[in-house]
Length: 554
Image 1 (cartoon, rainbow, N blue to C red):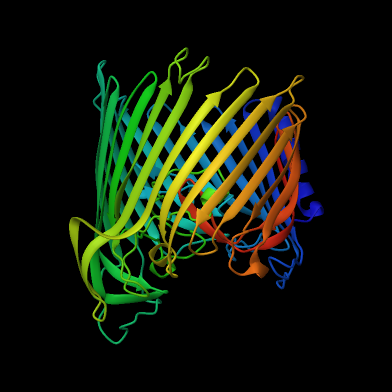
Image 2: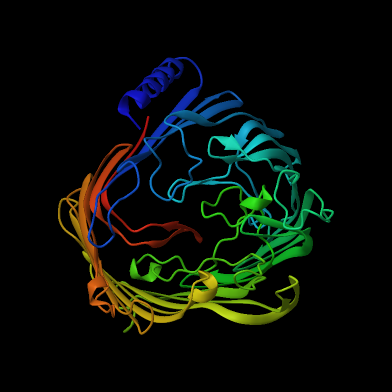
């Protein structure tokens, strides 16, 4: 965004904040800018697209007075959005979202754009994640009513945000939560309904010469129970979705109708020094979009529900090369898939201080295991027919075992040791080809100096006989004080069979932070692949260039 375009907006909101802060009410304003300048590079290739410089900018302002809150978010993508963001983000400067909210003890009502989640999100979730380019806010109305302090009832209607417009499909929602907890335990019940109305009269149907055999309105229902007592908890949620047409590559097959469903079970136990959690999920035909033909788009637009990958979210760069994505969709082309089934469990244990293994400060051990399969189903690919077995496991998609040991050596030094073993079915997860088995070892060391200075260094290695073979990586970060830090890092694919592609993916940069403002600069190479946050991913292209980010609030 050009500075002379965003400056007037900044002046208006700063003035607005100063005026009302002296009167009544409260104003919060935040600004975020992420910019990149792409350059030609021998490894990532020449930058052949338009506009080497691109910038994503967000200016958010909220004003609260008594029981009312008014807000808007202005956005600018100039001359274009950063690579791999939706082409619908096509405005230099424009108001993207706005809302008015009233909140009292009994009522919470919003007009305009809003975010909402029912239960775990498997039936409905709208949220914003700027790093992934997601903002599927609903434009419409939402009201929550609290008849008692035990009961909450929510009703909503809206259309998904799509860039600076909204979807054709409409979303209806109703949710109830009842808290039956006592002094000794927690017990909560929830029921939800979500309806998606999408008139397909202008959508291309594969069987356009026949009568459409599905309804414009798709219904989804869910129920859930959450229970906790002393050191244990257990949650269960089930979702059922009415019959809907198969959608492949934007084509709606109106005579191929299938139900959808999901089952989520979570259990856990924890007390001082030990904790255990397990999560099991089965999902079948649970792709759910406000406009049918947008199903599976790479920009995560118009998604009604939230289906993240239930695996450990890894911190290290090499562990994010072969990263799993949830597989909720039903498809017959190019592969036959109906969904996924699997589980994840975590064990946390702290070796006591003063023991041989615990040492002076104790030792923390974490073990994670996740295992995911396709649904075992009988398919007729030619006629697009399918029958699934409820608790039967089909093709193996992904397995991941992570062991992490955290050790405080003394007051100034800490170490982290991580070992990761994974199985990645690239054929089914990415719909390309290959199965990759890998092992990763990572060691991290941090040291505190005097005067708030600190140093963090990590070294990683990935072993595999498949795909691009072995990798090594290292990162060093030095904090001069609480304001200034610098880093340098590199990933090197030294084991690639093609010696011309034994490439370094280096990055160097730094940041400055003071009060509510942070500025970061960097230069380096971006490896193409998946960028994942919280189990949700987007595809990023290989690229080289300069990056700058600014975050501030006032």
